[in-house]
Image (cartoon, helix red, strand yellow):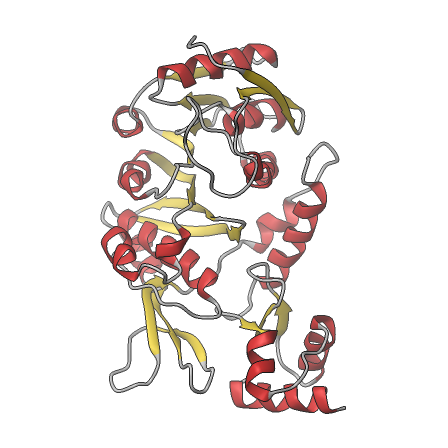
Length: 374
């Protein structure tokens, strides 16, 4: 193994040898021989929770861009599953470090590959495929949807949040075939553009997609989709594609199937307009004590459960406060008042100052003023 200083970190019930200069916060820079980002522990903890709920005996699980093996080895070690685990990284040093970390934890039943991921996916198929790249995942999506078994799950991370969220719309158009725009709810449209791209790529191969858990956290988007074979399933998924609109003058927003000519609104998309989460899956998840981000996981799951069935796109309390020139109320009080007026209202995981509601924007602004004036 290449000479480099290694340190031991612990995530969940798994010990990991990683480069001493590992990234502790943010997207980081890939300066070490093997990239490891401690801030992604929350994402990996969610993978453990999902794996414990999803993985079936004899499933073939692939961590396609494994680096140190943090996600794949943790799933093998902590998901209490008899699945077959495969970890791949084309970096020979990374593949050796994965083997060393497997031995460190007494994990003897994993297969380690040192391949270009697209080549591996062209030759083998899996029930669960995880793609967690440094940057955009677009170069791997096409191969991954073809290599995923019917009814299997594709998990994708994207750290290129700036293009997806409207900072670099031309980059978004090139990579994802969708226009991104800046807005108060850009984190949600960015995630939905990513989902829409995966749905369109899968449909090319007569495969449908069903998002089961998709979220924004820290510096990345993360989505999990069930892949379903069949032209009819692909067509049904495509029906959930559309556009998000935002009228800065009125603060109106929403999702529509087509852009409207002559409108003052700006449009982002095409993007996924359907559900982000499966309520049944979320109800089956049990958060256990061993997780390093246990409290964060519990809070996130509560928010994700609340968002199920809520309309797409959220408001921020501060944008309403700026428009009405009123002091913002407490979020819990605002949500309670919306519900007492017969509207659907939930907090959102996308933003601590964000909430979703089906109340028309004119009524919402009036209610906001009334609450502030009391």
